[in-house]
Length: 136
Image 1 (cartoon, helix red, strand yellow):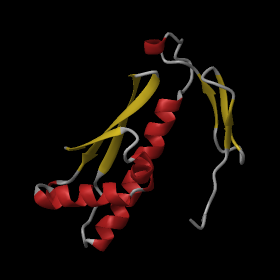
Image 2 (cartoon, rainbow, N blue to C red; image 1 turned 120 degrees about the vertical axis):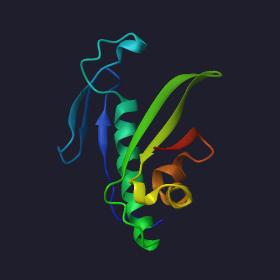
Image 3 (cartoon, rainbow, N blue to C red; image 1 turned 60 degrees about the vertical axis):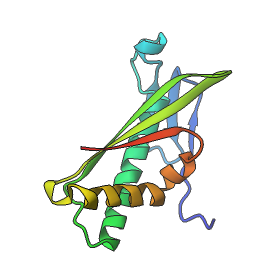
Image 4 (cartoon, rainbow, N blue to C red; image 1 turned 120 degrees about the horizontal axis):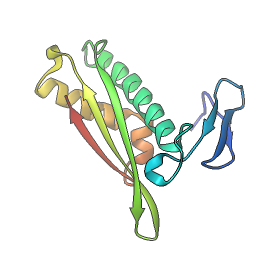
């Protein structure tokens, strides 16, 4: 792969801070209450959900242009779950894609499936975590 851009961020665990090398991201980190924390900060699952949703939406716009479809009114919500997985922890994702009525049915299904094949985050997770696609 020829890198077009590289992001770098440093974190010191689930209770601390996450800071990007350019300073644009500087967030407190905290365990969510569901995992025994106080929830007074973001967590890796929220950060991953935001990144995956943004990447998928951007990929959908690119795929939509290729398919001659208007995706301007579409939105993507990524739900990232963490849980016990054998000898440690694992992740699962539900991608909720809200499409306008003009993209309902088979057209929308083809768009979302093509986007999942194209999106870099989807490629990175393929075969590693469960990703469920839900069209709303």
